[in-house]
Every structure is written in structure tokens, then in C-alpha cells.
Figure 1 (spheres, one colour):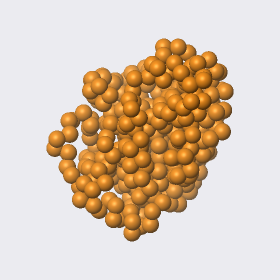
Figure 2 (cartoon, rainbow, N blue to C red):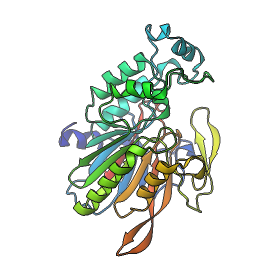
Figure 3 (cartoon, helix red, strand yellow):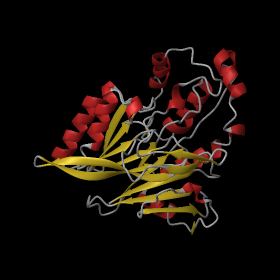
Length: 344
């Protein structure tokens, strides 16, 4: 992590506004939200200003990037029938264009107080991708918190074939290199924030997460801290005002209608809401006095959502909303993209 003086210099460089950027980058923008490009180093930055009354003399800043999609297939990988076929079938991202954007985005995150990667770090599971991730993310930024995405544990990408290795074996391969627990990880930040990194990469939550999240919520409430949730897939908002978001998925520029408010296939929606998913979803949305924001990637498009929530106040159930920020995919931007989550 850079010194305070270095950080102040980096984000004080001249900025360019986005008058020429297509509106696909922003949907339902929060009034505390700002986007710009750093003129010298060229990173695209989304500032998310959140004042939770934490009383910091200087705001605490988390750098978040989403969907890096490292796709390295080396000679060893090509001896594997699955990976050889994946390399043949996988169309995007072409010509390893992600290398510079990823490096630049992570460099910029290093000028923040903490770094989070919101899943799909790998484009597909290969020794080449894992080695690249270990060298250029885990070793270089050892304090980074890295959520799991669905791409991270599949060897089959655009092949229309199922993976041959059982899921648990593939997850074990990730456990061997990941810097922390792949399913649930929490860390206290600046004495006032508990960052919770959840694995919802299978479009659901997991049994192992329930008790751990209960413990962190109890601790946050007893110690006067707030919880921020970081994960790959957004949750269904159950917000009647969010019947549809017409997001442009940046790969190809095609519109995709996302019913963030009610789609049953989104995490927490009816179709995929098994018992563990329902329990974790309820823990998040029914403790809005301490769970203050959700950050996700997955859709390769940038927009803002408000999740219907509540909390208990002296035996009375109080209605609330939890802000949910979906962060755009990183490979589309010449010097990468990051969100600066600015906490006050």
C-alpha cells in the first residue's frame, strides 16, 4: 500500500469528464456517485461516496475492481483435453487485452487503503491463469480480498460441455493458491468496518456462511461497527421501483434487460433460493442497521440498485434500503477501471 502522500498525489492528478462516453456505463446513478478518467495514468474511476458517520479524520477508501478475466493457456494446459478445447472455443477476451487494464486498475487500487476484487478473476481455470493470478495479484497485492466468481472454477468455457472434474476438486485447486477462505472471509478495517467477502458464484449462498455471517453481524452491532458485503453476483432487490434495468453488457454492446427487483434467477430470487441462500439473504437484508452496502460485479455493466431491507429497533421492524453497487467489467477500458468506495 502506498503512503498517504503518494495516494493524495495519485488521485489529485487532473481528471477528464466523460462527455463522450456512451450512457451504457451508468444506470440509476446514486447522487453520491461520480465518474472520471485520470488524465495522466488513464484509469477510469467511479467514486462512490458513502457517509455513514464513521468519524474518520480522513476518509477510508477501498479500491474495488470486477471481472479481470485472466485467460492464460500454457503448454502444460494444452496437454489437458478440456483446456485445449476451451482455448479453441473461447472467443473473448481476445489477444490477452486484459493484461494492461488489469495491471493499471490494480496499481490504482494500491493507492487506496484496501483492495477488493469482485470475482471472475480467472476467465477459466488453467495452470496458466492460476500462475498469472498468483504472481500478479496474490503475491503483488497480498492484502487484497478476492471474491469467487463462476469463471474461476470452470475449465470449460464456451465449449457447451460440462466440466469433467467434480466441483469440489476444482475448488480445492483454488484453495491451494487463494490468499484466504474462498467461501467466507471477513476483515476489520480502520477499527470501524467489517468487510465481508462472500462466495455466491453458484448463484446462491452456502451453508458454511450462515453462522459466520451471524457472528459478524452480532459483533458489528455490539462493537458499533458497520458491515460492507463484497461478492460476485448481485442480489435481487425486491424493490418494486426496479422492475427493469436496461443495461448494456459492454462485450458487444447489446442491451440486456435485468429485472433486478424481481428476477427469480438472481441470487435471493425464488428460483434459486434454497435454505442456505434464504438464510444468508435474510441475514443481509434484515440487519440493515449494520449491513450498510453491497458491492458486486458479474454483469459487466455499471448501475446502482436499492435492496429492500429492514432492521429491528426495540422489537419494532423498521423499513430500510441497502445500496447495491454493480461495478463494470475491467477489460473494456484502456487502463482499467476501479471503484473508489469513499467511507466517511
